[in-house]
Image (cartoon, rainbow, N blue to C red; front, side, top):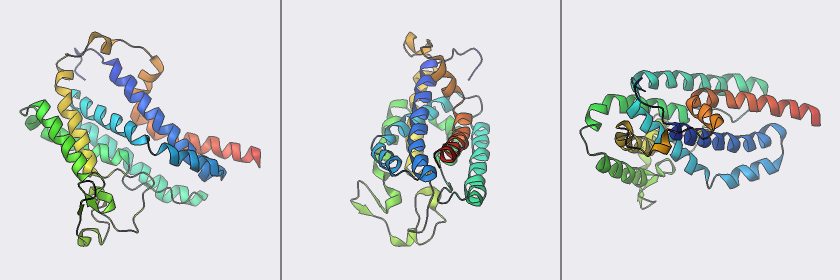
Amino acid sequence: MEEKRRRIHLLDEIRGFAILCMIVHHTFLDVGDVLNLNWGYKVFNALCYVQPIFWAIFIIISGICTRLSRNAVKRGFLVLVCSGVITLVTALVMPMFGFIECEIYFGILHCLGFCMIAAGLAMPLIKKISYKTGAVVSAVLFLFFYGIDSGSICFGLIDLPLLLMQNNLLAPLGLHNADFYSADYFPLIPWIFMFFAGAFLGKPVSEGKLPETAYKKRSSFLSLVGRNSLWVYLAHQPVIYGIMFIIGLIIS
């Protein structure tokens, strides 16, 4: 953010809370995968109904922060490098230790990296469009294309041509065949529209038009997690796997 701009602790705290919810969700999956406890899968599946809410919050805030960033493109490339590391670890390293079906080929960091770069390059145009109009159009496009990875759009009313899903070359866009698998999957379509909605909504935020309470810190922990969300996300799976592995050794 610009040095003279006050820190918006509310955004940090909400983002911190959202990523902690995502981590808790992943933890229950690890309970099933690492400890082979079926109740972990049950809780994980139950939370899948509410988890998209926290995904949306996290992505919208990321879009807002792109409006505040000094160099969104540079930040996007950094996130892409980190996402590449995740792919290498989950697809090559973890299977060597017996962890299967954990490959992440286009997860949330891959998606956010591309979104940051796209929004950063398009920022001059974004700033020329009414933020209300841009946010509404982005939200409509998100809803229209939601579910594209299942082969249909517009709430399932429009089926996509099978030709688009014969291979996985377009998997980053949400188009893939039945053989594609990614443990964490966030295709650019429709999530880039959610991100752009945040970028548009960032206009009044960047102009300092938030209520005074938004600049006050309520939770140092959540604020810290939110400010360091990238590193927290990168570290959480190795830490959780390590803890689960130790627990598994103890109970066995």
